[in-house]
Length: 266
Image 1 (cartoon, one colour):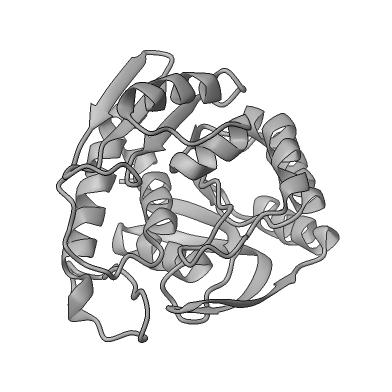
Image 2: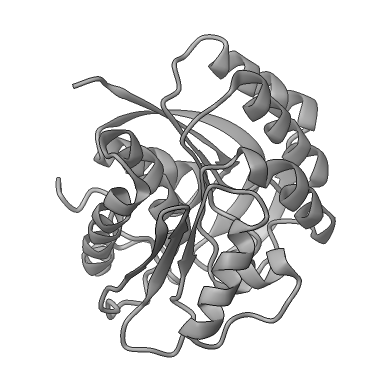
């Protein structure tokens, strides 16, 4: 089997539960070799975000050139982009190097509610980045922000918004329904082939730090092994559910702790 090289383009988390640290753990746990490009240095922990230091866009572009000019990248996950010119730099390099299998986690808010993407950057992301993306994975507030509307209150509105997001130019959309008040956590996948509903029982844990980062990284790591997103999504969701189920076995921080990325190993 060909070895998979996966790239994460994102911000950091020194407590290890989200961002680039979570992405690299996910890649490793799922058998992919991880590369990384840093867009922001984030002082955060399980209690929240304390400070953000944004990397200069030219240096983000230089990091991308370093990777793409030397390493065969089979799949890419994009997380925190922070500012307009970083979004522009990433979009330009994806186009220049014709990068395939790009998963965009539309990171706008940390679990604590702290903003991770400027409002000015949202329009740039819509216009310049989405056309170069294979799959976006917004939760309900993120989907609403991308569409400039209020977030979906039920699955009917999720369907409407998922279709509207696909119309913006990305190949596929995975709408995450975790914010719905439901015993299940329904997700909807929208592709050119149709619409598919996925469900998973809610895991009884407060330790959900980095779940969005981890799911999008899992989707990126797994996609080269499957024929479609329809096949990839349930595998990634099942792996994340098991990581959530083992989250309480970790002892990390005093706030919202991380999922257990290496639950299959220790």
